[in-house]
Length: 97
Image (tube, rainbow, N blue to C red; front, side, top):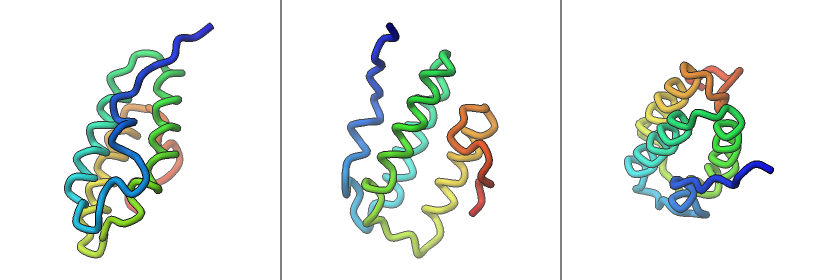
C-alpha cells in the first residue's frame, strides 16, 4: 500500500488565502509549490501533487486582482518550469493563456 505524502504547499492554498492585493505572494507560493512537486522523485507522487495543487488553486486565488498582468506572467512562468520538467501539471496547455 502506498504511503501518504505530506505536501508542504497544502497549508498555503486554502479558500480565499490571498486577498485582492496578494498577487506577489500568490506567485511566490505557486513557485514554491511547483518546486516542491518537481523535487519529488516518484512520478505517481508528482501527479498526486499536481492534482492537489490544481484542486486548491481556484479557491485560494479567487480574490486576487490580476488586472496588472503580473499575476498571469508569474503563473505562466511557474507553469513553464513545470511543463519543461514533464511533471504533468500543464501537459497539453500552453503556458501563455
